[in-house]
Image (spheres, rainbow, N blue to C red):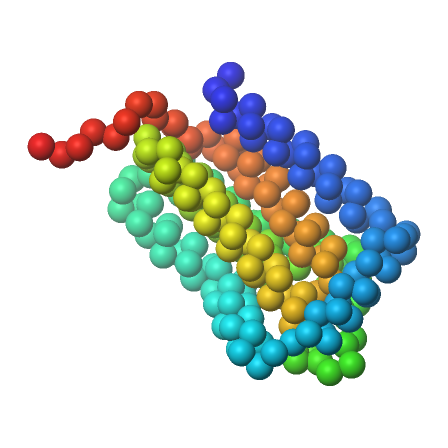
Length: 217
């Protein structure tokens, strides 16, 4: 079995267990829910105008509609490059994944935080975070594509770290703005990471290259 497939199976197991743990705690109203309230209150008390503007920009550029637009642009590139398996992986990962997240919201029906000074007000459910899930799904496929198409270890590392950094930044923006709890974003990142790994396993587009990249003559 290729090494990347072993890693994907491990990611599904670990991320799936993390999501299940959080979901069970949220459903039962256990200590994690109380931690959520504390973190949200602390961030609400430490907002600054500059950071608020930055977080609004981050969250608005990673809304589900924006993520779908980015995925569509990537799909056009993949189609032109005849990357059929990657196109299939992207299609399953992003639009289907976002639809699954909507179903999860309807299943858990968790109300959003109600801060003393709300910056945003949303009528939809809170758990899990759609922004965080969408970011994890799209950048996850993009990172896997980059890793699969280069032999450079620094480039591969940068792709994975870029994915993790984007997810962390968007997740933080949602909690900072008071529209999600901490467990909303962690659970979203967990289940959607598992979904990306599953989509890559099913479509099998990854072909890892070994050795250094050849330089053009």
